[in-house]
Image (cartoon, rainbow, N blue to C red):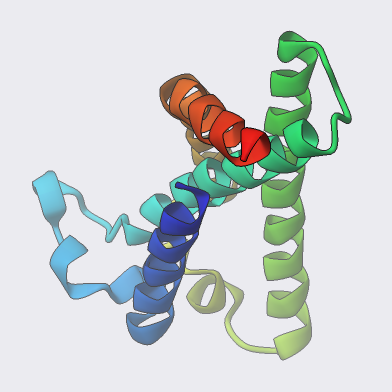
Length: 145
């Protein structure tokens, strides 16, 4: 399961990299939006997939035994990764000397950075809520064989 979602995340990243996130053709004006929201899909996956990866590492290495604390740590890792990514975007925009808004792809949306991190947070939580049970079943099969 993890490999499938890593592949899916790679595809999302490659499509965004090919067109630039603000100009992915099939997301122009989707559902009446004034901006191209493909970058939001990318940021959702930026939380969704790393949550599975972090979860698998924490479970396999028996780092944290309590499920509640495990979920708190996983979500925190994903949110920290997303915030660090936003800082890197900002630093690159400052150092590149280009128009920062064009580089960042905010498309005039002043809350772009915050919504990006919020979607990564939502992705991490959704991943844990939707896939934990089946992920546990897969991990049990792997560890018993």
